[in-house]
Image (cartoon, rainbow, N blue to C red; front, side):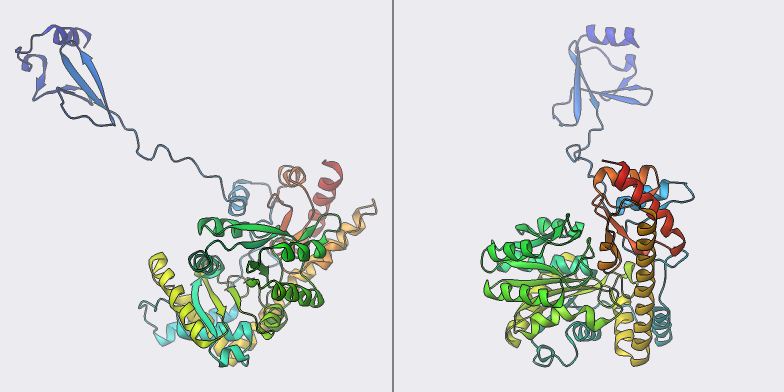
Amino acid sequence: MASSLLSLASASPSASLSSHGISKGKLNLGNASLCFNKEKTNPFIKTKSFGRISMVITSNVSRFEGITMAPPDPILGVSEAFKADNHELKLNLGVGAYRTEELQPYVLNVVKKADKLLLERGENREYLPIEGLAAFNKVTAELLFGADNPVIKQQRVATVQGLSGTGSLRLAAALIERYFPGAKVLISSPTWGNHKNIFNDARVPWSEYRYYDPKTVGLDFEGMIADIKAASEGSFILLHGCAHNPTGIDPTPEQWGIIADVIQEKNHIPFFDIAYQGFASGSLDTDAASVRMFVARGMEVIAAQSYSKNLGLYAERIGAINVVCSSPDAASRVKSQLKRIARPMYSNPPVHGARIVANVVGDPALFKEWNVEMEMMAGRIKNVRQKLFDGLSSKDKSGKDWSFVLKQIGMFSFTGLNKAQCDNMTNKWHVYMTKDGRISLAGLSLAKCEYLADAIIDSYHNVG
């Protein structure tokens, strides 16, 4: 090989290349291909010169070489780590998905019945309109605001079916970016991990308002009010309608009234994220009370809904964005623009889950059965919450007050553990959770409450 290259380098331009195994400007060397006398250049071709003959070697350099590896999702990444752990006592308390006492996924009986109805009716799979299934949009707005609410009767609500809560929030964020340029969204500190991603992606500026008080493991109500008052007039205030994620700490009805007062005084726009209606307390009306209070005051409101938790339709991606306007004409225009945003984003939403919701909410018998199942799911989480508190209180002899566990609501509990303590929970106890100290009680069974209590007490007292 070396001698061949040397002889090529000394060859005259008129020398025959065929004697060196070269045909039509190429030298075949095993699986490699060397090309000669190329006039055109390519950024992915390296050129080497041997005397008067130039050889170019192709290089597999990707045009996507500058794209860096993204970090794992802080919530979904927990499940990936959990699956890789073979310890028999491991617990996945990261993702907010309901589990049975045996820690298995649960499909609601009412969903199975609705599914059966769809099969019996032989529903087609044609595209939905951009705004989604009309029957779904009707019942979801009525479920949130109340069927007899004047805003429903006066057609002052623009409702568009979205891709669950995340997609519905993203539609609203795009609407804000387009029609309220420069307006800021205020987000609670802390909040659901995807909220900031959604507004960043939509190029909507945001800042935080105080919410969680680590000293009391409760609500920093004074800080919250002060920050909402200090915000520029006309800001959007993102509020968790019930079962605040990640803390599980909700304002009292009286505090909600004060929050509404301040938002009205500052001419802000309330923006609700409703991910747990009926799932938090077991009552659809109780969990929608905060939203209905603001609407009853005549305020224009944005509200995103999700059916992932309360109907267990996680993978169906069913939700909606609702915009309550001061007039039917404004609602019509807002809806037209939400559709305009949705069209190039995903064209139109999925139909299967929307039909399930429409059938369950629209059928009195199924609706009644759904309420019973929601009470059951909410009740199981309350029982687990109580047993965890009992275990913490009986095992911890330090005198620490663990009552915040009972004061929180919904599927999550904010433990107050720091990152190092959370790492200990995972590394030593095989308890997988987000690094902000949030645990999903929906992924806990009564049988494992004492084990979790031991892990929390050890991490709290023995890790700095």
